[in-house]
Length: 102
Image (cartoon, rainbow, N blue to C red):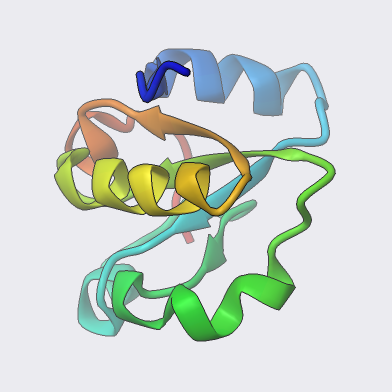
C-alpha cells in the first residue's frame, strides 16, 4: 500500500472553486494565522485538534488540506490517510495562494 500523499497546487484548487466543484478544504493553521486570511470556502480545524474533530470530516469525500507553506498540511494528510480518509495536500500553502481570502 502506498503512503504517497497526493498533492494539488493552489492554482488547481482555485480552478475547482471557480468551476463550482464541491470541494472540501480544511485549513489546519493556528487561529492567529487564519485571522490574517483564509480561503472563504475552507473549514478551519487546527492541526492539534484534528484527532478530536474527526467526526466533522466526512469519510465519503476527498479533502484538501491547507496550511501556511504545505508542511503542516502534509502531516495532517499523513494522519488522515492512515485513518482511512481521502486527502490531498495543497503544496506551497497559503504563501502561494493567489485567490480570494476572507
